[in-house]
Image 1 (cartoon, rainbow, N blue to C red):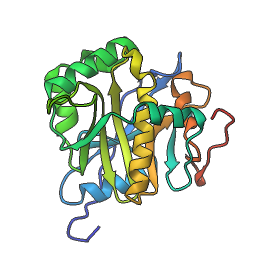
Image 2 (cartoon, rainbow, N blue to C red):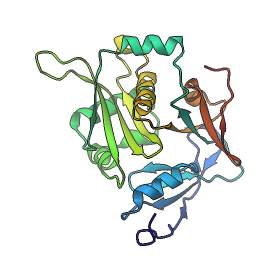
Image 3 (spheres, helix red, strand yellow):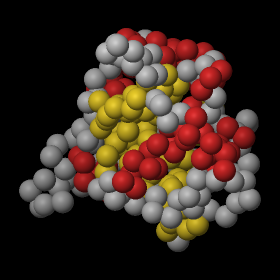
Image 4 (cartoon, helix red, strand yellow):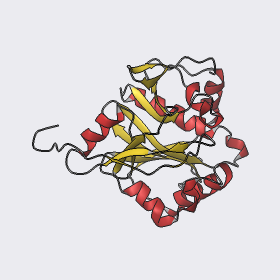
Length: 248
């Protein structure tokens, strides 16, 4: 950052709340505001040390006596899809994919509502209304896209929206902020995995070395899918280190 744009950020800590991943645990977050001409550079710098973005805030876990949440990223150049992933790529190769400016639509919001109701009925996002969703998508101080996944168009009419991902573009990769998809589409099973695969291949084509997948908790079934994209790295006290797993 240039001296003119840089201001050392002020950090704040949230009050403890029940952990959504580990029963009996509480979570606490440290966060700072992203604003001004240096917001993008600050977001990237913080992302490399484990922060995530939500609207105009960068945050990471700061829990007492717990370090279970670990940042994870896929190394795009070395990534090779396994047999299951190759079949998934082939099965969904007819989807029409477009990178849209971060502008919310009723179609996106309706799809996310169906996704949350089916996959995260007790989650904190279930109470979001259309205005909350618009804020999530549109309030961004960095380069952000909504990647849309649609059924093939017919006679020039766009096909149904079956998946979407709010994605930040950084100088070192793509950061998947939040993805959602049609959870009941029998003909498109594995859409969540396909969206990640598409991001890895998209980043590699753009010569971006990483895809940031957010936080992973070893042993948490809800997070298990994140280590199926190999090779991957996790953030440790000694820096980014390989994720060693047989779950691939």
